[in-house]
Image 1: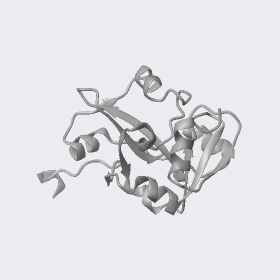
Image 2: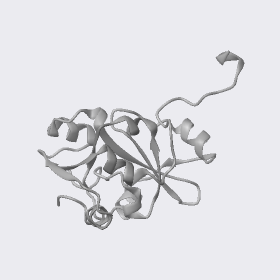
Image 3: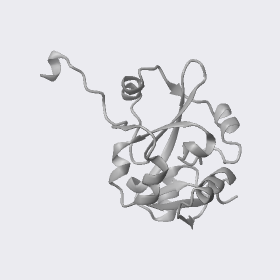
Length: 165
């Protein structure tokens, strides 16, 4: 499969420089990073969320981190839940299960990204299959995410309570 057609079209039409890294088959972004010998902290992954009226949101976070749902609720002021595998297969028809590239624009999906990603000199993404990763420079990745909101998505929300004083 290599690069998902929508991702390839998006990168080419926006003149975003990238290269690819082939690796042995894997089943997750963590396994892909290990197979490709890439630090897990340099891999961005997509977590697809939806609200009560089926609006989807792609949260882009480091693969070494966990998305904090309480933080997402505070940021978006909306109750979100994880999209189901069936919904993911319908939204990302050109991708294998579990290999969604974190480029929401290619799928006309709103995105929000974690601030930690702006610190990375190089970013690696699933390409849509379980045998290829996309490598982007910091500048290329910043171009992709520039028009999307960002925040600390992988930390617990701040609470103004007496317990925090």
